[in-house]
Length: 416
Image (cartoon, rainbow, N blue to C red; front, side, top):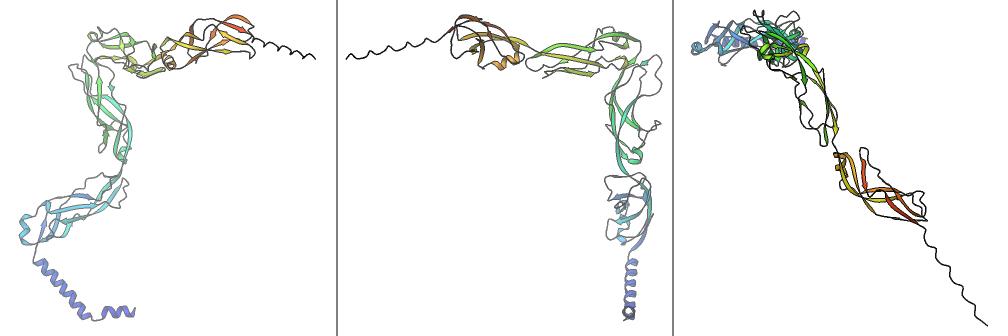
C-alpha cells in the first residue's frame, strides 16, 4: 500500500499540470466549434437484431441532440446527419418490456455528439413463432333481400401464421370474409385471409401463408333442388393387359340446389376426374362433384368411386413338344407324332410372356401294356393360363418289348 501511495504522489505537481493542460486543450477545442442543439426527430433503428426476434412496440425517435461541430457545417446538418439505434445483441426476448440504451452517431466524424434525449427507451420484444390454423369462410353482412346463398367452397383448409409468439398463441383461425353483391352474382374470387382470435377479433403483426384463398359461393335468386345420378369421370388408361371390369359409385345419386334455370339442363352429376393411368388393381377414391357454377350439392357432395380392373384375356396357338410320363425302362414307346399345336387361354400379359418359350406337353404312359393305345396330352401351365385345345389330341402310343437276341448254335465236336 505504501508503494502505491508513493507512486501516485510521486512528481504530483507535474502530473497535476498535465491534467490541467489537457482540460485547457479540450476546452479550447469545444470553444473553437459551434455547440448546437438539433431538435428534429431522428428515427431510432435496430442494430444486431436476431432473425427470430421481433419488436412489438414503436421505437420512436431521438428528439434532441446536442452536438459540437465546425461553424461551416451548421447549415448542412439535418436528420440524415445522425444515426440513432438500440442494440439487441444479448437481449433475451420474453414478451415483456425491456429498457435499452439509445446511442447516436454522427455521419460526419467532425460532428461530436455531446448529449441526447431520450437516453433510453422501453420496448417489448418477443420471439418469432408459427402454427397452422383452420381457414373459415365468413359471409360479410346480411344477405341482400331476395337472395339466398349456399355453402362457401374454399380451395384450402389450413394456413400458417407467423409472428410474435405472444400474438400467434392467440390466433384461433384465419377468416376469409366474403362480400355478397346485391345483383346476385355468384362469388368466384380470391379473398384475403385475416388472423382472428377465439372471439373473432382481428390480430395485427401476424403474417399469413397463403395470404389469400380462392372462394366460390353460389348466390340464388330462385332456389330449387333436384336429385341427380352420379357419373364417375374416369380418365387415363390402365396398365397394359388390363381393362375396367366395373365402376361403383356410392352414393349413386345426390341432391343438388341452384336456380331453376341452372338446374333445368342437368341430367347427371359428374365426379371430379379419377385417374386410373397405369393401374393394375382396384382403384378406390373419394372426392367431390364437378358441378357447374351456381349449382352445389347438399350435404357436402362427397362420393366414393370404386373401379375394379381385370386382365384382358385371349388365346394364342403355339407348337409344343411331347414328353413321356411314367415310362418303363424295359419297354419301347413310339408316338404317332412328336409335336402338337396347342391353344392356350389367359390374360394378354401372361400370353405375351409365353412368346419365345419352348412348350412341352405331357403324355402319361403309366401302366400301358404292349400294344397301341390312345393317350390324351396335358399341360402344366402357370396360374391363370389354361389349355384350350391341342391337335392332335389324343395321340397314339405304341408299346413294344425289345426283341430277344437268338441263342448261339452249339459248335460240333471234332470226330476222332
